[in-house]
Image (cartoon, rainbow, N blue to C red; front, side, top):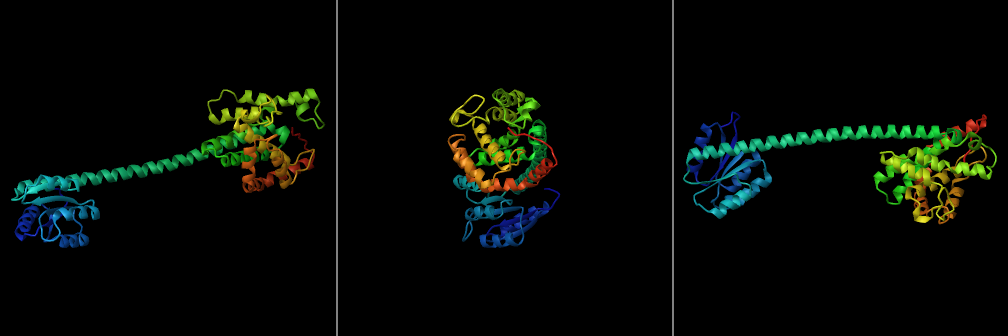
Length: 370
């Protein structure tokens, strides 16, 4: 027997059988209790748990066969060995199915009883150790997964901050603030989510949208910073920022950078085919480009510029609505208008940066937005 004393409950309606088993198992180091019926056995188990039950099959009232599943249901960690004076293969098989460890036939060979008890207790010990180990592993995995998720989130935030800073550097002369790219990317994500895109796709758009105008880094200052209207040749050069941006972003292994390439190239395309650089029409315009177009124009309408005051939000929303089916994807506009409250929340979130931009303009810093 194992060094640690094990609690064994002997359930049999014959006192002699209980006494013989108790004497032998006690000599092997077990602490034994007795019960003469199923009801008494349940009372004993309720008051003092047992590692193992030796259970007689034939008893007055509730039989051992009936008691077995009840014990396994209430005390699943308790091992059970069935005992009977009748050899019945069908009953033995059913007991094993119901969770019994072994099936002993009377009259007992006490050495076999001891061996069966020993093996049942060892099996129980290994099962409990394995369960505890599995639980420990699960807790470790859960802990490590949480740590990994936190690390990933930190990396994502750091990546998004880097993207904002790089995009801001590319547009610095044109926008003069990081608020535009932050708002525009948040608008894009809100529209995408409303349109039913998965969270991974929404996140990719959130990361990709800030780079929509990265190609402006290749536009000469004399055009980018011109305060008056552009002539035809200058406008043709300005429109090339879409192609330049796509070229800068081309060839990346990162999924969101590949999406940024698409957005950079197509965010000035229009639903009716009158946009640039390719004059794409309708659903031939990639969805990400259609979404970014709405977000970009709305932010331009509601933002202060050197040459204009911001339009009221309601007026800007009306312009977007009126451009449904001409400039913008109808489904995209519907999604945008459906998340109006979220859009207003985003505007409020970056209000301070908008006011800072206005202050820089007041003191003479000049920017242009094309």
